[in-house]
Image (cartoon, rainbow, N blue to C red; front, side):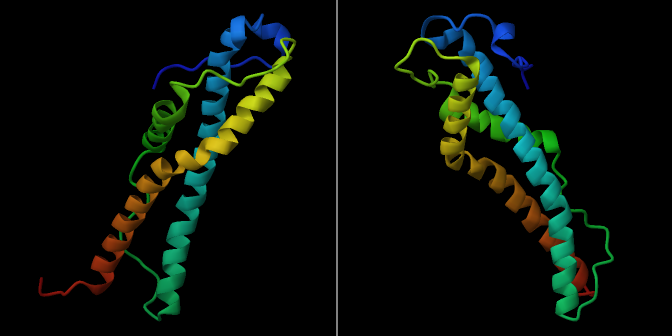
Length: 156
């Protein structure tokens, strides 16, 4: 993954916005990606806890006992998931995005930043499939491994 610039904490650190805020556009796109990466990491960690617990709870509820085998949930790396989601942002939304538009030419960084986050929140519905495609595939693989361990015919 390409190195991402860290956006500064205040306007004085980022310099002038440039024509049509062009100097702030890359920083804004990087902020979207940093924020999305944080979301993805949180969702991955939640799924890593939730899926095995849910699977075991279901097996116990069905009176099949806890799974004691070697199948592990989430064999794909966190970075693979993160990279897929961020790449989807680039392809689907960010590559052609020219940034937020303003009627006023005297916009502060905080206002610009607020608009980029609104853009992200409004458009994440076009990106979420990139995350869930990998997660659901991992869940299917994990479920299949458990079912093979629990229900396989010993004569196979």
